[in-house]
Amino acid sequence: MSTFGAALLIVFLFVRPQECYPPLEAFKLLYIAIGFGFLGIAIDFGTGKLKLGSPQWPIMIAYVVWNVLCTLVKVGGGPVADMQVTMFFPVIYFAMVMYAGRTFERYRTLAVVMLAVSVTIAGFGIYQGKSDFQCIKISEGTDRSEAHDKSKGEPDGRECVESLQCREGVDLKDDYECERPGLFGTFSVANGRARWRGTLSDPNELSLFCGVGLTFAFALYQVLVSRFWKNVITGGSVITVIYCTILTGSRGGILVLLAVFGVYFVRKYGLKGVVIAGVCGSPVLLLGGRSGEDAEASSLERLGALYDGCDFFKASPIFGLGHNQFIENYFITAHNSYLLSASELGLPGIILWFAVLWSSVKIPWTVAFRPPWGMDPRLYPFSIALVTSFAGILVGIFFLSFTYHPMMFVYYGFCGAYYGAVKRSAPHFEVKMTGQDWKWVSVAATAAISVIFVYTRIKGQP
Image (cartoon, rainbow, N blue to C red):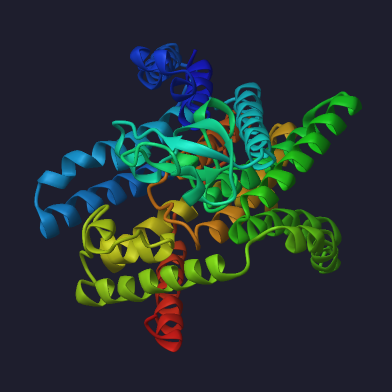
């Protein structure tokens, strides 16, 4: 039951059928998934099938507490209530996935679901990205994020080249955009860039999500028995995700794909793998990404956010601005998860955030390089998949504000589930945060903010 609940959670979080078919919203599907998940976890724990240990929990709790403390110190208790959506629920997602996949069979099931969701959404992106431009009447919902990003709209059938055409002969109170219509009321953004909705309503977010989800296809290739299904699943997933990434026009998404393929090629071919990855990635680099005035304007906008973000950190290096307060002090978000952590939570906060990352990555990293004796060998490919996923994530979030994004916490959960699955077949397996880990986490966090600071000062304020 817990695995069923976690699978539903992944579907409801990212595919968002409740928004694709609005009558479903009345059923509060996300809460139903959480209920199923935790009921199953309670049953597993009560019957002795589940052990709750994870090296991530102490650091995750400290990270949440520091978020609350920074917010209380800087802006008072009011915004703490808003952390229900941006912090407390993501921790629930983390716990659900972690405890729902602690056997090989359950872990494989969740991996299949994550891959299926990634490829399905990529398919939706392709459909949208290949549609003809039409006039879209914007539907602003009650949800704040939906109203902000204008992710819902209805095409009226008129073909167009620019948005001004769509305002001819209509009520001036109505808001229109000239974009590509997609499935379930979605449409493209920024002159045809494919995207999805909700937490993936930005083209860069969509490309990151699909790119890192692709790693599960490579892991499943090694554990599936049928050669036919191996080739179909892996080949179909790779083609779909690459094509979708090209249609998003995301430069960051291209880098994520290069990181994902690069890790696998380097692992298989050594340093030659870098050359092979570069050659294979060249067509994607040529076809993907953006250029021209829009791309230049976007880069300048992001540089401005980085520059002011460094100033926010300088002004309050211990407590920062408080959780989710960057957007309250600047007209856009940071578009860089490393700077966002430092500017909102200070130096202790970015160190804790790096610690959450490393305490998660260290689990599959340890298995990838030192597999414990007695471990179920079918689990090994997933260690490489998780390490590769986080390689892509660490590249992608340099250009995105993903510090509190649900996807991050779901992947933390996959690492925690992997810890339990490995430990089930190799009870002696242990992963702990050592003093050496804390030293290097602190160095990495300090280096990250230092590099961004130096870069922004060299470039200057736009």
